Length: 353
Image (cartoon, rainbow, N blue to C red; front, side, top):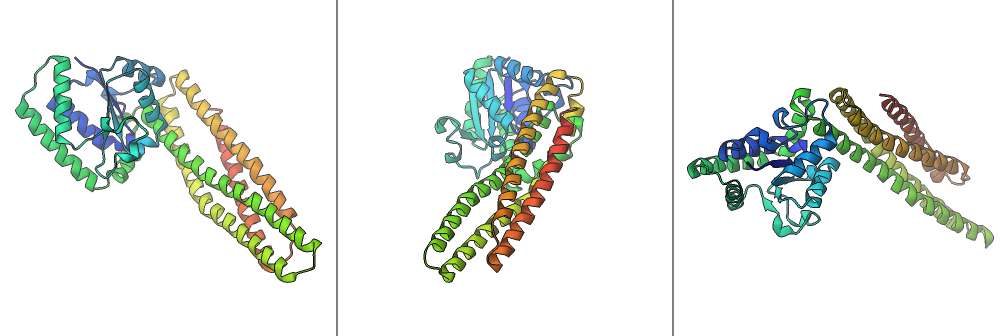
């Protein structure tokens, strides 16, 4: 019997569950022992199991690797690692777009676009069935397959129309431990960590934009002071500097509360990982590496923000709007540094687990 590996984001669990049960189990008669699917207890990593070994052995032994492509998939480090392993091992890879509103252009980075297909494409599903039957030399009743295929496509379209991304995300976050495997928990951590780091990247980019702007304003003021005193020019420069401060402050004020929420959710994922992986030291070590990477990034961010705050305070106060906007920027940076101190402390505690 052929072995199948279902590479997917746990946020798309509802759709992949449907594919496994309606098409694979019933439509083709494939038993669970021939399917590697991490979002089901019977086909995923067991408590205490090795995640790297599970990926290596199951992708290595598989005859088909299905990639259930979505925006969730593209944001998942675990999924991209699985995809890379499948390509590297030259497996029979089947990239499938699970949402009808996702364009082929958006996944051109994956592989040749003509290898991708929509999961709702009836002809494509028939081709997969024919290929499977030819490889396995088994027969399934066409009438059963057609009935299951029609049911699958109808339910898939219904799920797509109900914004499956939002529903499945809630489902994953509220499922109990017995319904998810270690890869699912680690995927949640990786995704939330990526979103958190993206927010910090936005702050860093804003800081990197502000620094040269401050240098430019300083040169402009020096040029004015070295020439004929021109109060109007000086005030214009101060107004531009105030606008620079305000743009920077707006980014911080928008990002800090969101980043804090993301970090708290990330911590919740860590707790689930540690509970499910408590019997396996290899899994723990892999997780510690991820936490240590996060810790180092937070330390670097804290140093950069503290240095920039000191630089802002050292800039002379010259005009009312500039003084007000500078005070706002310093206050925003104080809030960020306070949040970073909290995140660093909590991440440090993770390294002790």
